Length: 402
Image 1 (cartoon, helix red, strand yellow):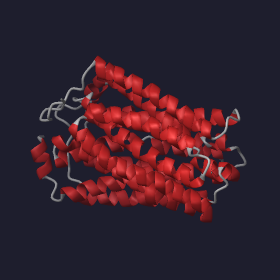
Image 2 (cartoon, helix red, strand yellow):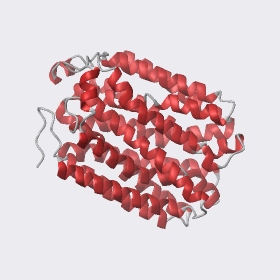
Image 3 (cartoon, rainbow, N blue to C red):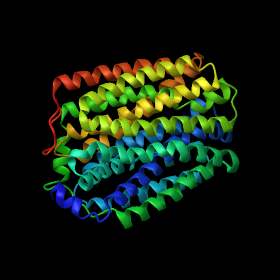
């Protein structure tokens, strides 16, 4: 199916992208809401914040494993049908999590929920590209990511308030309802897009042998571990480190989301110009923003500004990285895109884990930011090696990199 014919089947391309963005909003709210109710969960189950943080890591592990596994096994499915099935699984996982009687069951529910995360974004990115045209794939990716960023401005603060007022269980029930809304939106607005010609589990599995693709994923996993080392503990940073109220935490989460919203727009434009440059800029800005966040952690206002910058920089990197991995997997772009989210959530898992070790060692909250800077720099070094090892192979029809 050509890009032009794919675009022609979308009666309203804007509505199709909006439906995909709603999916991004649902996933973003689900993923990051756990940070907003971390202290609620730890208090409810009488465990430390570090132990409660395992629910964050469990979701991330689900994304890491689900991305390649489900992408390979569903290679021949019609894309719209697959999007609906993935969001249905996502919704069931959230509802199940809301009824967890103990932390172990909650962790299991979060793992199940995470399985479809990366595949939804990966398939959605390919469908969005088909709708708007391959030359604007950065824009398509940024629109899905914009849904995720708006989640941090609206969805995550709202879910945090819901968790504080009604209990953490209602936070997960809220995102379960959002999942149902997403399914309806996809049914009504997303066109039917068949899998790529010749797509099969064998083709997708063969793409897993692409060394540069895995190294690019590693760069993202390590680099984003830096951001998550700090952001996973944003509520304890503000509540226990700065003595802020839960209301202030909601504003802090919104500031991070506002930064991500700006970053998604900038990241899309930079990626459509040069994926290589956009990726480098993203890593550099993320390291710099984490440094600022750590230095500004002495005051509530300063920490909010730092958090805004972290959100902005990390989202520029997120859009650029997903586009770069799609370029590194031209014969299986859904796999490349889904592996990006596996990378992000592997970073989520290792960042939350390493951050927990820092806190357990009594090194203080600013040390989370210093750890973040180190991990981001290491990820950047790996990505520079990938770019020197093998230049991304552009999808036919794309303008060449300068």
